[in-house]
Image 1 (cartoon, each protein chain N blue to C red):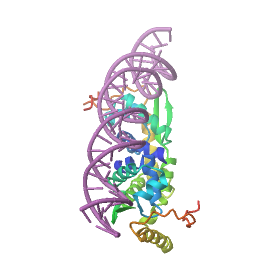
Image 2 (cartoon, each protein chain N blue to C red):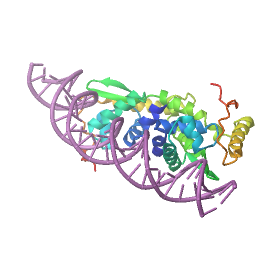
Image 3 (cartoon, chains in turn blue, brown, red, orange):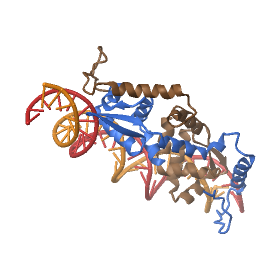
Length: 127
Length: 127
DNA sequence: CTCGTATATACACGTGGGGGTATATACCTG
DNA sequence: CAGGTATATACCCCCACGTGTATATACGAG
């Protein structure tokens, strides 16, 4: 997940990924369209490949790079954990729990001695 | 979008975001749980705030930081562009178009003269 | 084999950004 | 007001990483 974010956090890599949305492309074409030096393209593709975001299809001396769905699906799954923030379909129970936690935080008397509360129940989500 | 990825590409920031999933937290608590120096937490929260991923609720001297849904929803929308990579519900037409583009790339005769553009075929130095 | 093409890798360079420390600012209490 | 708390900011250090250049590797044609 972190690796996915790291890979996509670079402007040119993000552009490459979005370019590959139109289909597999050889390195040279990517460089032309994005106005990048060839070594840059190769190195960025290496990072994307290590992150699993693309894979290679050798074609003579060319290398066709194509998007891989797995990391994007993982990203989609990761987002699932946060959908309760905006998704109305979520149960009222979940929303209630979030509200409770916010209230609990605010209930702290502002200058509380930061009690370690050794036996306080945690709310770790199973899974 | 890039800003969102950049914000989430840092390990501690990602941890903060995932921690805030359990509800709003003051800076001190975040630092305790993640074992970070307080200035680090403040600076990371600043980045997350600039990216719109969190907002602040002052509470006396404390600052309660809470997740904001907007960037995550944007991320979800951005992923929508790539769902055709794995989502079977997509029309066969879209899949067909992708296949066509792949075929088009591969149709190039491997040692093609690389001259599809008569105007400009040599890229200039960027910047 | 040689030659041209397509891509990957090695290397030096410069900068951005995170870590760590000290200090500033804001707030509450007494 | 003073003093303590909670957080933000300034500053410096350092290293990872992106850029740009040169070179290596792989492949097909002849």
